[in-house]
Amino acid sequence: MAPKRREPHHPFRSCPTDALLAGLRKAVSVALLAASLTTLSAVCGWQQSAMASASLAPIPRIPSPSVDVPANGVISTRRVYFTETTHGVPSVHTVLDNERDLYRLPGYFMASEPRIGEEITSRAARTDFSRFVLVAWSRTTGCDSTKDATLFRSGSRLVLGLDQTPMGRCLAANQVVAVFEVPRDRMPKEPRFAQEQNPRADPPGPGRTLALSPLDGDSRSSGGRRSAEVTTTRQLDAFLAGLPRKGADAVRRQLAGHPQRGGERRFAFILSSCRATGANLNIGRRELSAAPTGDEAVDCYRAHPYVAVLSIASHLVPAHAQLVG
Image (cartoon, rainbow, N blue to C red; front, side, top):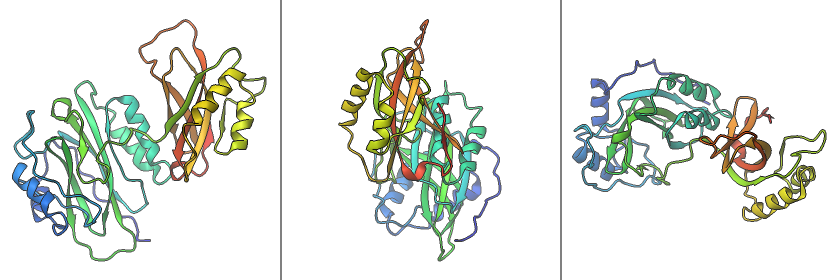
């Protein structure tokens, strides 16, 4: 594997440097994305460099944005984070709307390169979410070395512009991870990530809720665990055996609508909430935990027990993670 290359730190800035402007105009990989570059040239006056991959759809011509966007199409006011790596980080494209979303994002990187998630959280700490959102984008860029990145908008589409230097062949493809701060009034209502096969935004963090049910009475039998892996039928049966029958039956009914997927792991947690409508999976370097959602604005004298089952792609679970809960 090729050694990891670290680019020098760039101070935060409100607009791209002259070097980035020149680099983007050169447009390294234009052959397969000519239509994309034509759009950016027409709408933004810029061109973007992208990975030469047949799976990346060209960007059609789109009418000018209806909100106040700078003439060059750049909508971010601060590049919060940028790095290039060869450590196999997952491809992620998402919008972070609040602090809770920000603290979920590092979960995508904890199994591959936890430093990235932790640095993003640290550098984005001063973001004012009442005025801004964060756009996080990681993707494979091939052998070329990327020096900088900029976020463009064309209609409802977000476009990642890269300043790249041709490097020839390589043993491991490079990946870039970038996070941008964008004023809320410049973001499209339903953003689409133009260079991705699935242009819809990913969830702010990994994991999805498969089952959620309130529990009557004592949430666990004496000495029982409040969290467990339930990927296999045997694991699920052992966990549900310690729950009140009504809650256990509700979980089984909900899981029946979610057949097991390949490359998936499942975890169950007992949570306390005033009025939970869902749950988030929190992933650290060595721990997995869950937190209820939907009750952020609800006050109650006594929280109620819930059981939640969440799933996550196996490759996103840190090798030595322990369940906490």
